[in-house]
Length: 380
Image (cartoon, rainbow, N blue to C red; front, side, top):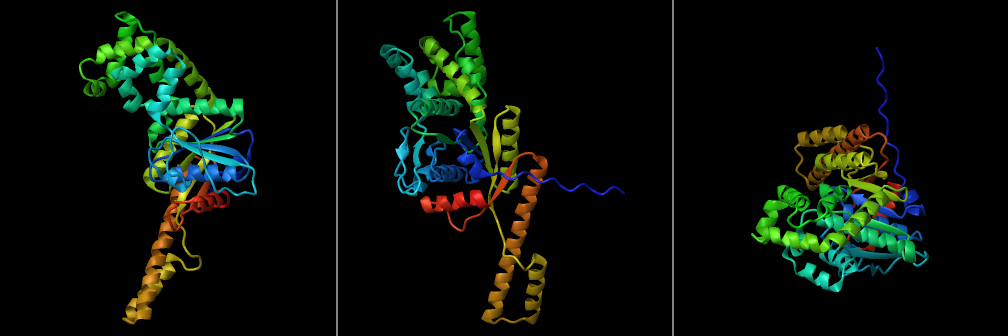
């Protein structure tokens, strides 16, 4: 009988090595909701800054947790300095939140005349597109990342950009440039090429847009595409450039998950999508790993609990001991569950570096908490 091969362990994700690498200029975090991705992105940015790097962290998650954890009253499209960093280091940290409409407005203003820009801003199709059109958030995030990357190269204000993506599969929509190519196709009002663009648009987005914009949709689209034909050519070119930038050796994608089935399924999706697109995946962070006190197994605690119950001792000391044993049994079983789920994920993705991060006893709401998360990222 042939002995079973030992299960291969995933390589360890060396987070500090990633953060200290001067060749890494962009770190993109992605993952499902509820796994601590925004907190992890902030912790990565803070740890890098306190190791001497000049960092800006960009969130396109509409939640305000990042601002609160960094001690800021608000975040917007302008980088804001984070105070309270370790003074012994020469790094700095700034934070910002994507303002989708403002970023789109900046693109329009930068690539057309003031008169045409005003026409675009007044167009109902543009107003809907820039505020709520499906996919616009991801493409504007790519545009903002492109702007930040250009500033990094030209001005040297930062040497690392950390991007916190939305908590859903749409976080990777910027890897799909079909919408950009659709909207940047040549517009010939009344011509066959234009009708193909409009027909394709209706097939994908028509029902939603008609409900938003009403029956004047076709005319608004026609006017919008005609006025932006030149600008969109530049946008498409920059989008393609940013896509190639994200595939470069100076970019690293970090997938954040937790040891729960739904979160791990999403993590597998992100890993497989990134590998399919040949994007540089640095590793997976398994967040909120539950632990248990060493020494007594769940079976041993269960047996002790049974013996106490048989004694029918209702004294406070006995009741307290029973309660403690129940908690211990639950914690041991939860820890075993988490380890088993992580091992299963590692078996499915044996070549992807991983690191487990223990669950914290309290929520993170300040720099002290973010430093604790950062320490776990390095030591977990």
